[in-house]
Length: 146
Length: 146
DNA sequence: GTTTCTGCAAAATATTTGCATACGC
DNA sequence: GCGTATGCAAATATTTTGCAGAAAC
Image 1 (cartoon, each protein chain N blue to C red):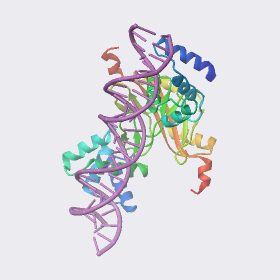
Image 2 (image 1 turned 45 degrees about the horizontal axis):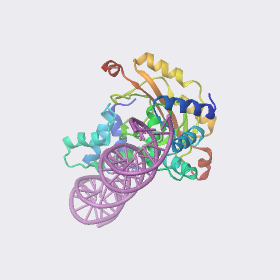
Image 3 (image 1 turned 120 degrees about the vertical axis):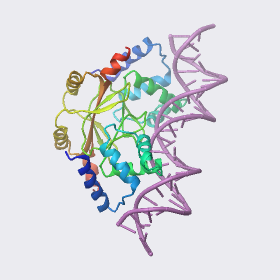
């Protein structure tokens, strides 16, 4: 697992080599995606970026995130009935989602890539990604009233 | 695993016992959700219901599906960047999604509920559901060109 | 008879797009 | 300088909502 800084550098190189340009806005968006552990929404990324670069639009956030999504550099999480949330990690990993407070945390349940490979062998699909999410009520929200 | 017919009966009872009423539209929507293997969108359910009950609106489909979703009787699948798809099965099971032709098929990789319970024990969450989806390119789409 | 459900149309929400200008390379 | 990226506003797509009439129970 690379540090966010190392991954940032690597990612910037990869973007450039594909003909993408680095603008301050784009750098800021990348940085938030790679460093945040909050799995932010587009709106949250937007607000966060604006504190440093007031000259940023929500459309740019969407455009950048879409590009990264297509390159497989970010994952899209979340429910259909609320806005999408993004995970700057390039490799799929399980999430634990609280259905009350909407918090999303990472989870480690061992090697899920191996499962992927098994599925690929058995089905003939070329598996490119996967999503393992558990939905439930976190300990804090269980206390809240229930 | 109950037959769709048995589950239909059971589900109707449960709905009634919670004060919900059974209308022809609602019955038709339930039937499609329980019998279909296609993981249809709201629009597809709507079209399908209309062949038997032309007097049905898309809003009713949405209202019914939302109710079932809240009751935990259907699962919502699909990506954020396309419309939601519904699975009439009450218990979570893995899906195999083709990112080219968008086909979604069920997948059997053993007991995923056990994993859920492990996660619950380890994290203190009350796990209510989960989603295991694999994204890739199906054999047919691999042949198509590439 | 009461309460829920329905269909319609309008509203709300999230995301995408077109285009003129700005700016990275 | 060329071509991509940006910001704005308008457009799109999906889902939700308000309300009056219809229909379950």
